[in-house]
Image (cartoon, rainbow, N blue to C red; front, side, top):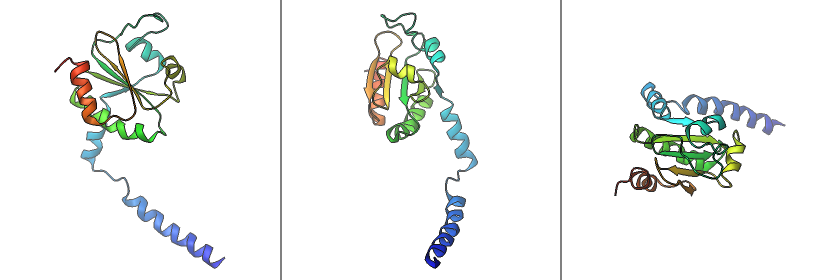
Length: 158
């Protein structure tokens, strides 16, 4: 009983110390992070149908609804690789702002969209050129591979 009490007391003393120092960011870092995240748009099914592809109206033919090339990230909040790729996509969205659009779809909140595209593994990225057929990639791709796909496939640079 004495040991249990000592362990609980030690844990209580350590917890505030970790909590006070963990996750503190400067005001500039918070503003920069918010600005970068602002370049990524989270979509619902209704948004997807209006901005990306209305598969209900055009079930047999791909018809992109947007004007700029896009990346759609199918992810889940609990997915480790999804968490790893998120800041990379946010960085690229900021870097390529005005040239491409980056969308995110939470597969847990939008299961119908996931089913419509046969998403069985996350993250799954849908690369959509302004004209032409999209390509799909699964897994947390490294930044250089994403950059190459954006430059060559989405923007047509070689």
